Length: 251
Ligand SMILES: C[S@@+](CC[C@H](N)C(=O)[O-])C[C@H]1O[C@@H](n2cnc3c(N)ncnc32)[C@H](O)[C@@H]1O
Image 1 (cartoon, helix red, strand yellow):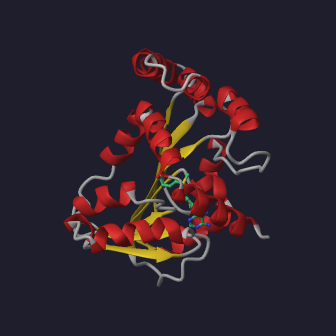
Image 2 (spheres, protein in one colour):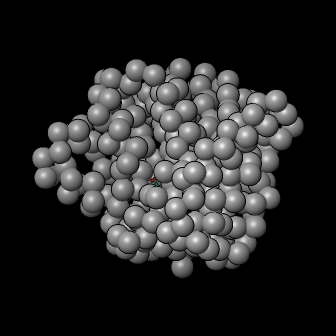
């Protein structure tokens, strides 16, 4: 079975399991700063054509549509896309300008230069980066932007978590590395990035080993504050962060 089919099957199964979705959402809530920052740099997207790559169950898609964007919600998982279509059919007014499309983000079949913005969250690890970014360049208009919230490759705690507890087992995923920014600068255009979370990754272990423990939320604030301070004042630590928000402008 190809790698793409394995990921598709994995996510079709996962999106059918509502309990896992709920747990995932609870942990994701502890790490909201990065997402808030990513949304803040979107700016005014009213009337823009936005491609949400690896949209999953459409959390980001719904936000984008509520801001007035026309959203192409792309994913390889039909189960995920069916969920978005069902919400739209149920009359959710925010979803009237959403077009769910089953497609592989390496080769989208979209016409050239149709998108104003390409957004994505936690999808790069499943993609061949050069093929994907080359496709982004093709479908973006000049001056269009890519905004991604992604996990980085080198955080020691995240690496330990992936090796021991990852839902993907031993499958090697392609986490982004800040070394790749120079390729983006050279082949697509000016790129900015901001990193999040060093020590706060311990919360993922705690959430896994002590589910239902009430202290996660209390610990999240001091740890993320400490991490933000360290990443701000000690730039050499940034490649070791857990997440990055990338913003790349297509020239
Ligand atoms: C970790 S989930 C993230 C979902 C969503 N962005 C979110 O943050 O909730 C990764 C998503 O990427 C999708 N995906 C993986 N490989 C893909 C590909 N080649 N093309 C499009 N989507 C893909 C998966 O089906 C899955 O829905």
